[in-house]
Each structure stands twice: as structure tokens, then as C-alpha cells.
Length: 508
Image (cartoon, rainbow, N blue to C red; front, side, top):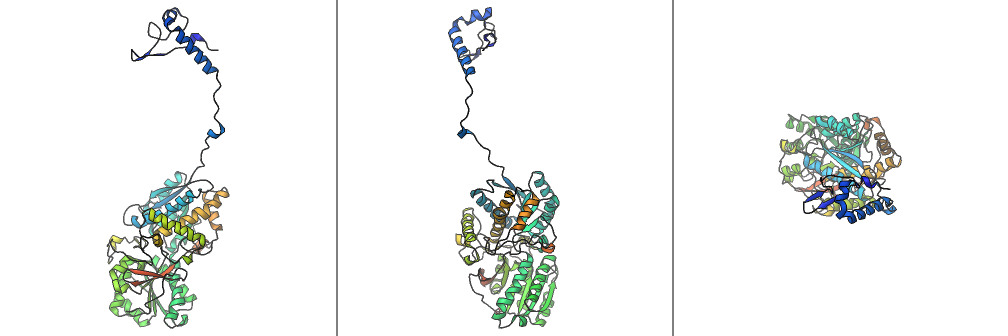
């Protein structure tokens, strides 16, 4: 029941341009007071109607929403940190790797997310290794348990160390230095190839493919292994030497050179004295170019030269050397355009989906690009002997820019690493109710995928050994060869090959 003595009736007075109270004093009055009785007479009918409406409205029960109108809040997203250099020399290629990660997240979300939860990437700029601790602390304070990054070995080593110290899982998207997974850090994982993979790949190719081509048994094949004097190149050369020994190759020389002051004539003289059939080189880009020029100047003729650190994959290498690059082999991670037979049907469908999305996203063509800052901190603009010419272009086995060409090497590496995480690891962690760092790491260690299961042709099984903890034991590596000026072909393994080995022995 409504107490009429406490009801105020508001009327909008259009003539006065505002609200007016009914009292003569232009202020609220109580119904039933003398002033109100005198003033309310002209409005009695209106007032009664309003009172009835008010009383009736108050007496009505509130309408209940229908079950179909009830909105259920979506489950909280899974936030993943993504740390890459977003500015400077490294930003271009790092951006390709990040784009691959983003496409993988888009695919996972389009497929329903992870247990119905969307993936949200929290992208942070990692400009310098000195920033790694602060970046990881910021991510942790924002409630993030998992970080993917960081393109270059220099940045990734620091980022993974900082992430592990902060109690975050670190998932590498592309860097290859052995040290990354060589420190026994239990929260660090790498899906892609390591420097050891690339060096071992070179020696295995020499034993299985080059020895017969040169009319020799593996035991008769004379191999010289040369490296720049730094930790990364040395680790690649050591891996090549171990695999060469296991394959029974005859290693006739282990030589090195100083990056700041290489003595090329003396090195060429040392190599010539050992009469190698094959030279396996672990170099950076500028010194790789200089090494090949020194070979030509010294007249050192060999059956084959294999670059084992991806430096010989650079457009700078092909652009600077022109005809003199033809015949040189490179041990590398897969880039787009390899033979489809390397993939399982499911992986092939994913690769085709990626190739289409890559073109739609405006991704660069599939040609390999210079490894800016990947080796010992070199930047392309700072490389002595590098062309620095951004117009240099090379041609792969399929037309660049077509869907068949697929993504770049960095794009495919970033996508494959992230796809393994989003498709094969996080769903198990969510199902187990353990999306904390320890739960994610535990789920990663149970994954067991055969070769060809990932869209770059790799399988997936992480090493449990302390010396290589968190390294994918089924990472993918290929051999390709310059077979025309600025034109390359995949030649090994056979499942990846788009052409046959040629120019053995080297023409000059």
C-alpha cells in the first residue's frame, strides 16, 4: 500500500521549459496539505491516474527472463606471451616468425579453441637480451605462464634463461643455437632444429649421398671440417665431426679461423695439404662469402662444399657470388615449397591451409632470407662483405608468391612450433586441469609424434637427457643446393627433394 502523503508528482512544464512542482511555492509539498489541496484541483484527474499507475506498477511482480535469454560468460582465454624483436634489423624476419605463430593461434581458435577457450597472444617487444628479465617479469605479473619467442639465438638464450628463472615455460619458435636446450632448463622447449641437427645433417648427407657420387665408400671419403671461432659455429662443427665419425668418414682436417682477422691464404694452404673431397663449413654470412672467394683464389678444388649454419642459404651469399655460388650445398630448416611426400595427410592439409592463409595475410614469398642477428649478433646492415641490398631475390623450386610456395622459412618455423604447442600440448594440459607451467611442461614431455606429423615435416619427441633437455629429437633439417644463379633446389632427404643433386664435383 502506498502512503499518498509521501508521493511526489512531477510534471514537465513545457511552457516554462523545465520541471515544475505543483505547489505554489514551486517546491515539493505533501498531498493533503492545504497548499496542496488548493493547487492540485486542476490536476486531480491526472494525479489520480498517476497514483493508480504507480500503485498498479508497484504491485506487478518483476518479469523473469526466459531461459533462452540468460547469457553464459565465455570461458577465460588462454593467454600466451609472444616475445620478439619488433624493431631494428631483426624485425623483418622476426615478424615473419611471429606471423606464423599468429596464424597458428588463429587456426586453433577457428577450430574451437582449447577446451573451448580461445588463445590470446600477448605480444611484447624484446629489443635486446638485456631486456629479457624485465619482459619476463612483466608477463608473469600479468598472470601469464607460457611464452613463445624469440627468433634469434642471441635473444632466445637470454629470454629462455629469464623465463625459466621466473618459473615460466619458454617455447622456442626458431633459434638454432645448441646452448638454448643445452643447459638442462626444465621449462625450456624447442620444436625446430638445433645447430647440432644442421651439422649432423651435413655429415650424414656426405656419407649417404656424396660418397657414392664421388665414387668412394664412406671410409674413403676425405672430409675437412672448418668453423668460425665462436661457440655457435664450433658446436655445429663438433656435431658434424661426431656424425662423420659414426658414419665412418675419414676426417682429414679440423680447422678454424678468427672472425675478426681471418687468415684465408694460410687456411687454404692447410686445407689443400689434406686433399679433402668434401668441405663442411660452419660460418656466418660475410665470412662464408669470404671463405668461398678464398677457395677460388687459392684454386682449392673439392668434390663438394656444404654450408652447415644456414649462412650459405642467404640471398647475400647468392647475390655476392653469382655463378660462383652454383653447386654449393646448404644444410637448413625447411622452407615452403618442398616435396609434399614429406608430410602425413593431416600435416599436408594443415600445410595447405597455412599456405593459403600466408598469402592472404600478405606474407613474404618462400625464398630464404638472410639470418639477421642469428649468428653471433650480426645484423644485415652491419655485415662486412654482405650486399645489404634488399632487392636481392632468389628463386625456389616453385613460383614465389604462389600458394604452392608456402610460407618463408621463418614463417614455417614459427607456425610449426606454435601448432605443436596449441594442438598437441595445451589440450592435454587443459584436460588434466594443469595449465600451470609444471603442467604444461609435463604435457609436452608426453607428446610422441612420428616424422611428417608437423607441417614442416618434423615429428615431435622431446629429449629427457640433461645435455639436450627439451630439444625435439625429431626436428626437421634439409639439404638444398644452388643450381643456377640465385636459384635453389631441395635435394635431400628424398622425401623433401624437388630435384636431384648436381654439380658434383664442384666445377671450380
